[in-house]
Length: 292
View (cartoon, rainbow, N blue to C red):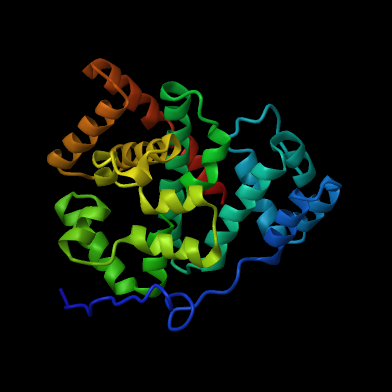
């Protein structure tokens, strides 16, 4: 393997000088301002979103996906807002805009990102409903979808390093975070956090970007990782990985043991039943990614 130059990042200048990104779409600012307006006009917000036809198409695909389980097909933004509320449609629009603004050209890698992210979202919702029913799974959508956004930052600005990491992960059957540690590369979680800071994304997204790996779950006592939503997104992430990726036996056992511990699953039968349910979600994930 060709030796790669170390990645040196100054948090104060990254994404602002040598590696730059445009601002997020103005529609997000308009929606956010409207949400705080006591005289908010829902039709006006629908018009804001509808000003970007491509974004409208994505929003409606998300609204009609298995995550929300709408009672009937939703065909316009106004109806989506009526069903889900302004805040949820805003979070959805924000999540889609973040990915779109990164403008990743490698479609195969972008498809992989969407597959894993939506699988994580569905897995997180399933786990929340079954093991932490007090959590509002609507609030988890944007954080679950964007938890891995640091990988797209890697892919956009450091493609050779990203390729080295994915090759190492595949050869060793390990997790992406373990490949980063073994190759002494900048953690994608750190890049995701910097992106959140740059675009001033909500704390729930920032926390999901920064803390979502198996090691984070093992180190759950960490003060910044005490929130139930973060823990559930982390669990959703690792069970999605366990269901889809080729992993070594040791990695599989570590994921299984940690998952069972934090969900208080005491029997192998219960764990296998839970993983069977998670695995079945892949049908909906394939359908969703195929429509994007």
